[in-house]
Image (cartoon, rainbow, N blue to C red; front, top):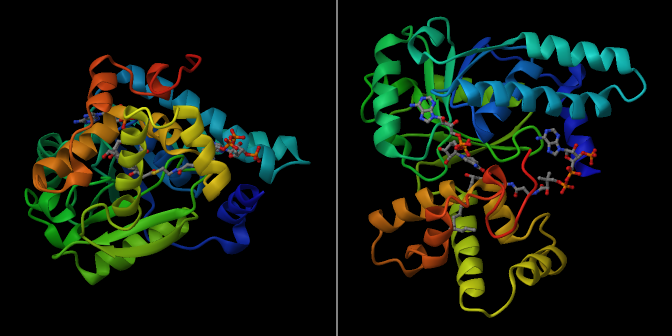
Length: 310
Ligand SMILES: CCCCCCCCCCCCC[C@H](O)CC(=O)SCCNC(=O)CCNC(=O)[C@H](O)C(C)(C)COP(=O)(O)OP(=O)(O)OC[C@H]1O[C@@H](n2cnc3c(N)ncnc32)[C@H](O)[C@@H]1OP(=O)(O)O
Ligand SMILES: NC(=O)c1ccc[n+]([C@@H]2O[C@H](COP(=O)([O-])OP(=O)(O)OC[C@H]3O[C@@H](n4cnc5c(N)ncnc54)[C@H](O)[C@@H]3O)[C@@H](O)[C@H]2O)c1
């Protein structure tokens, strides 16, 4: 029910927030990029969704269309034709590309949602900084990397910041807006206004590891895997415990499968490298084993649990 309220609030025209940003390029068409593209298109913005893999783009378009259908069912409950129009019009605002350089030629904002690896992000942002118009804001959806460290390779440090969305993007209400050491006030204000324009409640956080949510979530999830690894409780019982005992919508292991175990491993390994003495961030053999076996969770059909392949 809360989610129903959120979705209605997100897209009711009476509460729409204006943003100067009209053209958005989203780089990375996976779980997060497709959600970010969806909410931007729903808000009336022109979107180009970029991925290195054209199969991913085909899959993303299909999932965005399905998810828009879920949203339309709620907003236009008694008006199915208007619902169909909403889906068609939103979809028509999303173009796809495998070439980031040509996809940013008219971008007011670029949101990067590619793999959680600093070297790969650096390579991409160097290219984007050289090719984008001078007014374009560059932002990263990183879960765990430092915004200033990502921005170190660009010249426009004043026009760089963090926009950290939550999964699934169309449902989760929060956006963490991260101001790096050199992010200008104008860029920060533009990112806040844009976040509101796509229906999110924005909070501000300094460029501190994990921002707010992940600084608390990472140790919690890691401890849950260690509990399971020691054989103290079954995966199902750990998940039931946190849902029924702490009121979370998903248990920690289910959530790991949902986020993607490959991504959770990138996060934990990155923090372990940076903070080798911190026991909370030490590698978890079970997580490493699952990832080495290609068991990334929902997206590959198996993680802590098994899933039907979509
Ligand atoms: C385990 C390894 C540990 C290793 C070390 C630690 C590493 C830690 C890594 C941290 C990762 C951080 C990642 C990131 O940076 C930050 C995050 O994003 S954290 C994740 C935040 N998200 C959550 O916590 C999700 C919690 N779950 C939920 O809220 C719900 O379960 C759900 C996902 C919304 C699904 O709800 P359900 O009720 O189960 O299922 P339904 O299918 O019925 O959906 C409910 C409702 O929502 C609508 N809906 C669902 N998905 C979408 C969508 N994509 N688009 C549009 N609408 C959607 C659906 O239609 C339902 O609507 P209703 O029918 O109720 O009106
Ligand atoms: N999964 C989550 O719950 C979640 C939540 C918030 C933030 N994030 C962050 O968002 C980012 C993306 O995560 P995800 O879960 O969507 O990952 P994902 O694996 O689902 O998608 C990443 C996509 O990026 C593409 N890609 C890789 N390198 C590329 C490049 N150079 N150019 C263009 N495309 C490229 C891949 O082909 C893939 O489709 C990461 O930084 C992650 O930490 C993830």
